[in-house]
Image 1 (tube, rainbow, N blue to C red):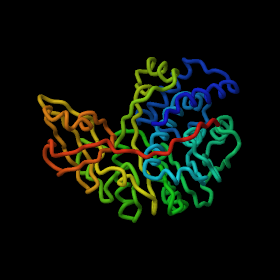
Image 2 (image 1 turned 180 degrees about the horizontal axis):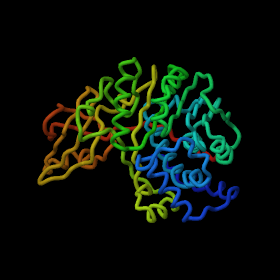
Image 3 (image 1 turned 60 degrees about the horizontal axis):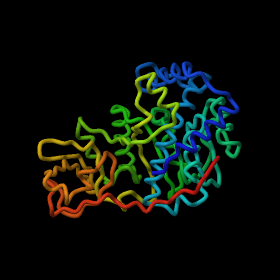
Image 4 (image 1 turned 135 degrees about the vertical axis):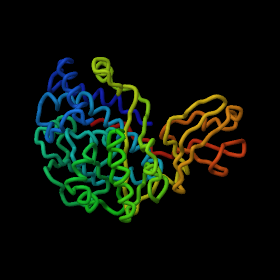
Length: 353
């Protein structure tokens, strides 16, 4: 797992040297408003980045959180296509805001042959210049590609309703990847899962998080939606705002995502099962939901007396990739061999924007 926290702290310190330090009370108010708006408790305000208070709250709080999520996705992508991510790529950051995904890409160690940020709010692109420098092209609409890597972070509602999703796919190199990042809310995630199925029907490949190339089995369930929940330790400002607002983003990264490609490689090369629920513990047993490469959803159960032979399963967390040897379905036992999937991932070089 690539830890961007030290680099993000350094980047925000650089930002404070130019913009000054914001008052914690103002940031808390801005984060509270953004959270309610982004979770549907308040009407969504298109172009909210034009508001200085909300823009600053986003940069101080949500930018580090979302950048850390992008880094996790890049880690996973590097587990099955490390050589691709070592290349100088043509990158498009759609709905970039102040450049969150692009910051994650550069801090992660990514290199660019061309770099375009698209946002309709000029003030957001101005902030991106402070955070990223001027080594990118800013635009208010999608520029002609093709692109090797396209980010669409927290703009799914807009790209789905406005037709930009197809535009982004049209500009994607056949060997490239489109990364769509969204919050882990059930309603928006299930919509993302539905779009995922349509993309598969249209001939696209879901490189991650899915292992199956067919329709999503979770859409048949009302109690599950495909999202990640990863532990992390965020910058101190996030913890302070969490204490004031009752949020819990300094310890856990919760998100849903898709990595879409036409001819690229896929996560199924690394594992045949993914843990898609928390590990539940009951009297004498543990169980978890697993999603498999053969379009299966398996409520896998193991007795505590088999813990020694099934340690990886007993330690599994939501989102973990597993490699299983043995029959699927029913109860796990000594005849099964579970291993957390090995990740031959690209180790990013030290990188500072």
